[in-house]
Every structure is written in structure tokens, then in C-alpha cells.
Length: 359
Image (cartoon, rainbow, N blue to C red; front, side, top):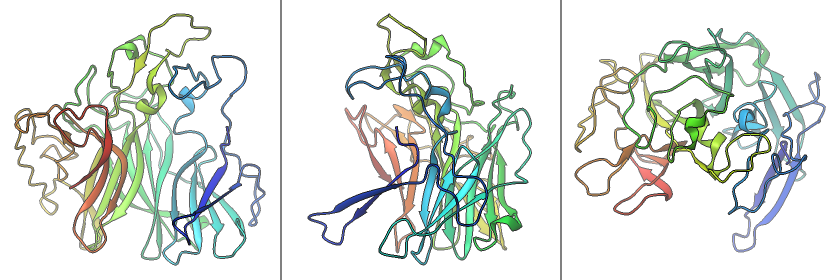
């Protein structure tokens, strides 16, 4: 497995794109400091580690707990198109790559992030980044992975704001809010509210469509009026995958696990020079909860969601399951609409599909 691979498609001729790649693992940064280390995932040692055919179950033992901790997080191009910014999850660092020249990569710098928010019973882990109006925004969460208390402020989201020309100068906190809020039903087994990150195999994961939502602040976007759009991935769904064997060494049974993703999409309003999470009086949600089974006392302020349309309905009158966001979204240029990547985006009979929803 190539944890440090960056893949490039030259689409000057869309009919015949040219694909190239480069590897950042082990690169000595131009600005000094330790070599770039993106961690490793063991892919040798027998069927507990090796991946088989794409349509066959596997155990993937070592990768289970390395989701969100190894390799790259988000990747963004600077507004001038000259710099690629990448989150290094293993070293909790930002990598900048000069992509302005004909040969890639150009100069590679790395900035180990220090002085990060203090977390109770957990670790601060980054993922999402965004270059916007001369600033670099970095999203992260306090994971609660060291004995965090369920539904408490042990799990908190942060958006940090850096000067990209002076990462060492530190950050300001652009936004922070706890992740202990009420969430809607996702269907399947298990609760829908965010839970502390876990590294432990749980026999309950063998239930079909079991959910154990673990938050990753995966993506940051901005609306034309500077409002902030945050999308969250569900780490757990990546850990267990779809119809894989349980994470048990030398497993010889036939039971299969099937994770159910339960991400989220959240808005923060830009009010008088600062960000306010949705549900505040200055950042209303206006959640109509139009279908049977929906709630409008959920969301970060428990007053409903601004993006209340992240659901699947089979009959158009009631919800089949909600919280279908997968952790990626874009603001549709020139509009006030957001395209959100989801699963089961349409019905009826739309189970186990994927696509996007305009909301």
C-alpha cells in the first residue's frame, strides 16, 4: 500500500487524460525538520492483512484502527493554483507542494502543528483543510479515544485559522462546538449520536447495518456570503467496510460485518466578523421536518438542522434513514446551493447506492 502516493490527472485533452503520480513518504522537507512520515499499514503476513479480490471479504486487521490516523487527510489547491496543501494525519502536519511548474512535485515543505487544542480523554486529530481569502483553515476533532464519556464535550469540533505564509506563527480558533448534540435516526442497529473513537473490535459490529458513528471533520467549504459549510465523515464505516470478516486474528468463520455510514453536514454563519454555529438566533435553521419520522429538535443547537435534507425516503412521505452524508461537499459556483456527497440519494428502491444531493 502506498500511503504517500499523490495521483495527478492532466486533462488538457479530456478524451485522453495523462495520469502520473509522485510519492511524499520519506521526503525531506525543503524547509527542514524530520522526513515526511505518513505511517504504514501492514499488508503482509497472511490473510489477516492482505487484501483479496474487491468482491471478496477480508479482515484487513492492521488498517482497522489506522483509519483517520495514517496517510493523508484532505487535499486542497491554494486560491492562486500554485500550491497543493495536504493534511498529514500521522504526524499531525500540513504539507505544501509547489505545483506551479511543469515537473511535479516542486518544492515540498512540511509544518508540524503544535499548540493544538487540549482534549479531555482524547486526542486532537486533523483532517479537513481549505484555502480561502488568504487564510488556511484546518478542521479537527477531539476524539475522546482515551476513555471519553459518551455524549459529552470530550468530543468537540474545531476549525483553526492559519496564515499560510507563517504556519509556525500559530492559529486562531475560527469556530468550535461540542459534538454531543442530538442526531436523527440512521436506521439499522445502534444509536446515531457521535461516539468516542474506538480501536476495539466489538462483536455487535456483526449486525447488518450496525452503526457506531465516530466523527472526522473531513471537509470545509465557504458560501458566497462567507458562511462556513462543514462535512463530517463516519470513521467507523471505513473501519468495518462492507461485508468483511470480523477483525479477529486467524478468523475461520463465515460471519460478515456491514457498517452503516452516518456522517453529517453543518453550517456556521459569518456574523459580524466571526462564526456562529447553526441554531443560534443569528444563524437560524428553519427545519420543517416535512416527513414522518423526522425531527426538528436535533442539530448542534438542538433546534433542528439547516441542512435537513440529508435523508432517504422510499415512499415520499416518511424517512427510511437519515444522516446520509459521506463527508464531502462543494458550494455550487454562482449559486447559494451545496452539492453534498451521500449514499442512498434517491428512492424508491435506492438502497446501497451512492451519489450526490443538491441541498
